[in-house]
Image (cartoon, rainbow, N blue to C red; front, side, top):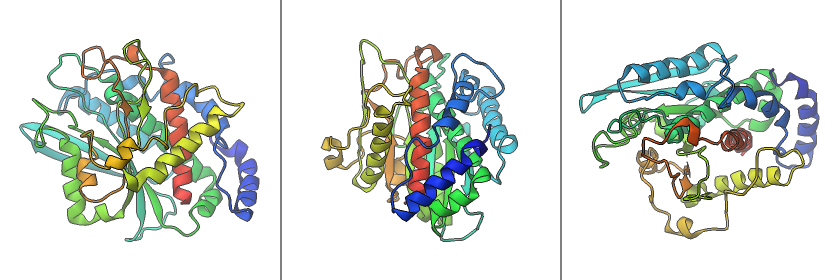
Length: 345
């Protein structure tokens, strides 16, 4: 169901919010999430709407399974969206492997301008080559499915509530880019040249055509959605960079609003701690990932990766039975609300 049934409520609230110069309330879209999460991000319900279970295959670069996932993601944007998403494929070959990055762009105001800024959300869809049968459920099937859910949420919002979008943007020229990187994993052993193939290639391309200058923020998801175990009973997602800390605090505020809400059915413990500034004070790359070439191009980075890493990381045990459906759904909620807030500035 689209967002229509809560449209009047949203518009009334929006008028009040604008008048008193306050932010849009987190949780305003909870009816939407309750309607869609159980179908789209379920580990059990294998329906045509499920965005998670199709990733339950190996996805090594250039393989038949990789192509299946490319088609699944592309079909989502081509047939299930109501707005005009721009679809781009960044195909290239390196070290005898074929790679394909997929870029999906939604211009929130339907105006094409050279000075438009974009909030970029990304994850990698490839899996390790050197572990036979490696599924990569937490690394990073769950993150990809969350981004697909986010795209559907934003598409429904723009289609049903363009008035709301116009008020959120307030003449700001913003859009959304969602990128699925290929080749994040090393083919042999992790080095600067044997890793993050897709992000390095796309970053170089965007530097040359000046798209890079339009990226306002790069939000990278990795290793999201795993179960806690005896070895790793809890984790946190740290704030690593001063240029993105205000966005990290926004994520934390959204998390807090749900933890304190009577409507909360997804949030049980806090994972974001904006007052924990140890890594923030270091303010350097501590975990190499797809954000590195964008960081080097001076793009603000919000790196959403749990620490310590899940116990199944880079083992054959990284299968779908290590995923936590509730954890996946909570991050889908947080990022949906975050996207709306971030667009409002």
